[in-house]
Length: 232
Image (tube, rainbow, N blue to C red):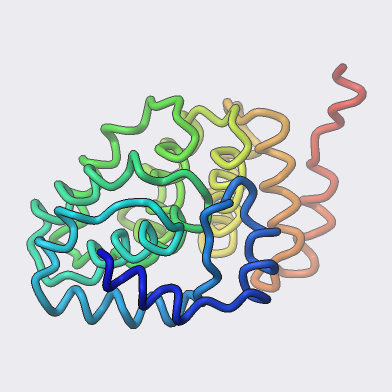
């Protein structure tokens, strides 16, 4: 860990730190190492004795946590071990950046979809902000396929969306689902659903901002926004 920290300090860029820290609230332990550089180091560690690394990995710096999560995604291991390592890692997530970068690093093969889905369902009823966001972002990254879209939309509707970054993750997943499966997603957001006003409107906003959504659909979506002030 001392060697890793010395390397991180040598790669840190103050200007990048100032820029990134402004986008990631509460991340006072950031050094300012760019994500592609962290990914390169994580791949290097994943090719070596990554289990020993993970056994001593700490969270002194934002970048240490990020690398540890990426190593779990890059390591060439079976699905059971990846699930076990990711399960141990999830409590270490305390910001959207680590959450989303690590989730995007985990790539599943078709045979791994179902066991990993069952693992995610263990967090479906969680009220912890980043456990909820993990579920939403992993489903967005891996499960927006014909075989899973109906299950994904049903789970998104059941997640606790009170916390801000949980709500934003669900909204992002819904907007991405609409871009890929507009009919199925529209049926969910038009019908009875449990999304909070904030999550619902954030999803609509993201859909209207997406270049993957047709222009003719965007006005329809804008008209579907909930009038929160009137409801109050």
